[in-house]
Image 1 (cartoon, rainbow, N blue to C red):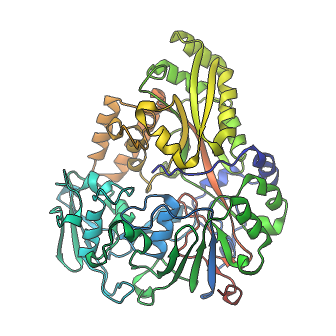
Image 2: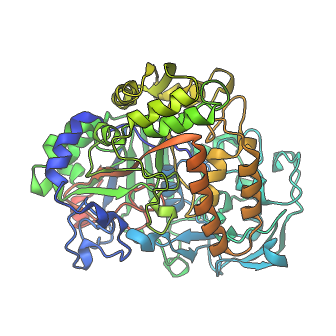
Image 3: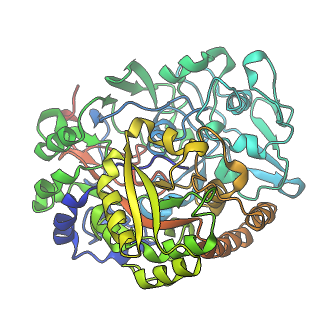
Length: 585
């Protein structure tokens, strides 16, 4: 999913990061062992996959989360931003299936959550049946029922509850024209023959539906708790915590759900007694408080990524650097080329762009090689078993001479194009401007405030020639990446997401449909990898970077690691405190 993934780490951080962390082997990001510091690993904190900071937490105390922003949505039918999904799924509501609470590759493994297993397919993968565990309760002690999961799936269709995952609409049979349950209409393709059984009837086989069932769409909402758009303010808890108070833009306080039973939940450890989410802070202010780690801030973690200007305060100091987590995000940042109009409706011009971009300069502008890798394909290593595909074999600094040759062959030796970037990405935009100039491409940079950036580039009629953003998979499958980014049928006139290139290619869409019909997951995964290479040759966009997410924790925090599924954000299922007495509040 596009999630508007990250504010840029500008060039100010690059030199310091390269100096302070450059000794770490970047190949360690491909680690599969999942071991952490608490288990005796020698990996340096913040330098490799599998790092755990602070050892094993002790139950109790108050964990504080320092943030520069409020949640976009906590309603599980609307929650589709990676860090927000992590927060909601791990703390407030449970899903049919979820991911292990472990660092590194092990975190991508599925385990049952509300359900007793990962789902049972039948009818060639067109029907999936889940049985709910016994003894799972809401915050008021009432039982979680299969009908509640069905109801929330139906809510994801409601026009007033926008913004959430749309896999139910893609996969479920008989959904055409359906507008959700708020008017009393229900889906025949989701059956609940008893209180613990839910059956999904799909329009086509979906071999990886177990992964789909990890999304918040597949968590329970009792119809009696329905509050429409206001449900965002007070989701009814089936997880280990419930909302005590929520003052939007200021503070959210969670306390224990005393009816949550650890015996039914193999994933969440629920170490803190309370979790206080403080909002409205400035990013630099968050960094400074965690660097100092005084008072309650010793028991705090940060929500936004570490600011560039904080690098010099963190990396040269061993004690502070040891509290830095920097897991791979699993996302790909791309330069989108507007294929809907000249000059990028010409495949030769698009191919020239692949050679014209200096990706080394992009790495520098986004934090240096310690926290950012060059992207050589659209699919990130998280979706390719760690293999870093490089079908075009273009030098990291690009090949301006080759780009000029291709532009001349296309009859466009002197291009003038516009690039729109978020205000926080201006440094990256300037790096692109400089590298493209070497190939004779003149770029005019326009900036948009982050609050309207995606509305700007998602307006297809007025979309810029070039734009920069990323895409993150919802779970480890090419099905959650390539179709969203390059399927022409997903393009919307307003609010366009994913396919910012407006790429429409019939052969590509036909192949996506063929892969979607495959019942064997391994066969489908291999097909996605091949399609990724084919798309690189068609050049609808230019992959730029595979990044890490730098996050600081206080000195009293334990069990902190970046989860590989939720773009490197802390896994709130297992984070807690070393000494609960120091984290009271």
